[in-house]
Image (cartoon, rainbow, N blue to C red; front, side):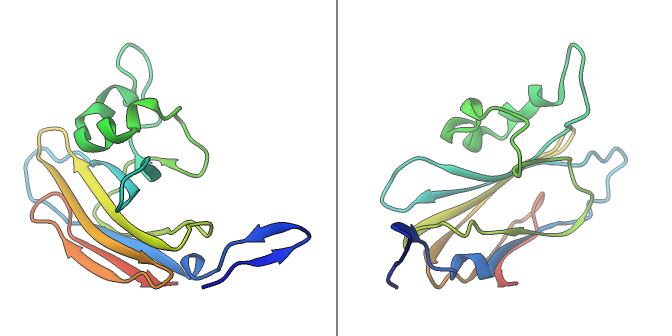
Amino acid sequence: MSFLLAAGAAVAPAAAAAQSVTITIPPIKVSEYHKPYVAVWLEPAAGGPARTLAVWYDIKKGGNEPGTKWLADLRTWWRKGGRSLKLPANGVSGATRAPGAYRIPLPANLAPGAYTLHVEAAREEGGRELVSMPLAIPAPKGRASGKSELGAVTIVAR
């Protein structure tokens, strides 16, 4: 897909803007349930810096043990760039979510190419899970599923 020039600036194709990721947090029947911390990020398949799309954590918890304290439990995301992300990050940070399906738009300015989409969840008194799937821009599509902390992860049209 080619780029258009408008007033001397490159305008990225809108293919990625018409797509989003749907993440399902399944209900888990346990005596003490805590909403999971979740991180969603993209990495170029050929290597390069990670780009965080969303991070859901206890944004209101403060004091000696702020909600950001347990973000390191999202181990893979934390190592890939989470520790250097200044939080809260506008358009990226959000509160933890209850079981259900949640849609996150893919960035409109993603360059055409191959990526890997990662979704990681960690829950207090629970487990930890990472779901990864290939993603091709400009025609992203796909589906993967977790086994415990995450349900279906799907690339869908808006």
